[in-house]
Image (tube, rainbow, N blue to C red; front, side, top):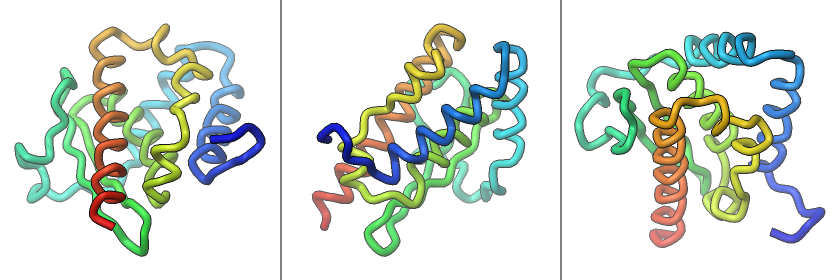
Length: 145
């Protein structure tokens, strides 16, 4: 994506980065992540099936994508509090966005928020796996189109 061009995805990332700037330390950021995770919408038992699980996450993560009007809608949940918070971040950034925007916009928020430095290696891997899944859903949606 060319400099100066902005997408819905980039704008959502920017908003999230701004929110995290309110917190001086990582204890507060973790608490905020956990709070975000607690506010995830209800995830139906029927969708908690093996085929919806994301591989590469130490905790259990169920992830479902659907398409509506050329935009991808994501729903997800985890059995771990911090991972649920990461999911909430990802849904805010990517759900309701166009597949092309998702593929064209680098996940800059990961570096901007220093997530790799503050997440355990297993959570970092889980985040990477979820990001990869989102990109795969977007690529599949484009191919199908």
